[in-house]
Length: 195
Image (cartoon, rainbow, N blue to C red; front, side, top):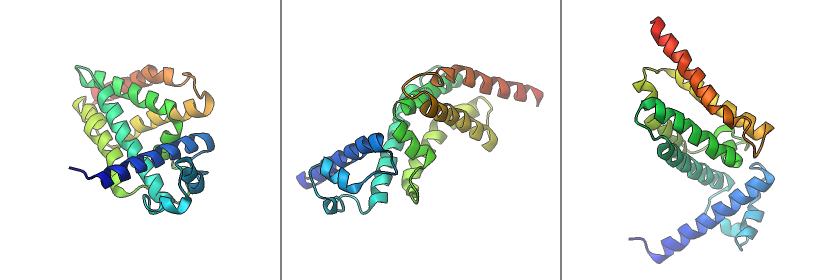
């Protein structure tokens, strides 16, 4: 059972993360200012160090939070009776989530903050999401190997990058998910028949 001090600390950390995301959406991730984050939660910048050891520690918490959210989004979105159904729906869930949360996408995928590298345990969360859901269903369809998984990542992140850069708030690129998915699957089905 958590004591009151731990609960308060966790609640304050959550408020700090929420303020950091609000500012990152407004100003961009690389422009995130600890002074502004502190002011947004009613404290002075040095007090943030009670909750986060450094600015990169705050970024790491933001990264880990996003990786955990994506794990849930993909797992909950990847419903269906076949691996192909789950993959299609999981791709949709992934693309829609990040199209609606571009700052989170940028931190998790594009790494726009000079010098920031997520801790291994934070990075492991995002790797596990891919391995436990997407790669498992791809393997069930006979689609394995680094080239196949890299192409999956390139397609999903390519759609997202174009959506965020060229049609923010729209659906010009996210509406292509089914077409991109079908092209990917057709390529691998043909490749499988040639073997």
